[in-house]
Image (cartoon, rainbow, N blue to C red):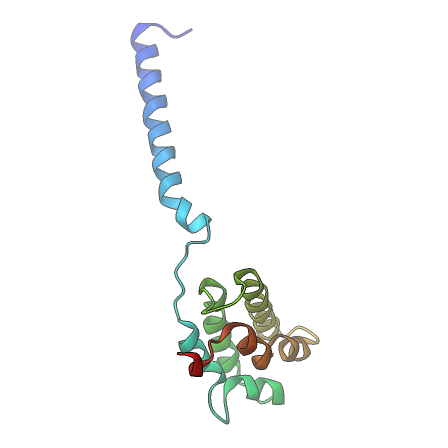
Length: 138
């Protein structure tokens, strides 16, 4: 049994511990809710990975990408699901971009069938149709 001062000390300890726990949960909540900010914008990702005649995406499809190319793609593609699509269904955007990230990680790990998984996930035309605003409308 606790007596007098011990009870007061224990109650204060519990209050302080509860305050710290609450403080930590408030600090961690935005990240836990997926409010993490993307490192790169959609435009930055597209320019770094998919733009140009000899881009990383094409090198991966041809089997000529370097380890550094794949690491760069993983880094950049990981930002896509954290961005909001300019138009279209946000849930579909999340599914498609997470598929790209999964395909990039499979390539990075050297998984069997990773190139085919990447080719399936990287449908530029489908994403642009659903999510890229038509410049003529603006």
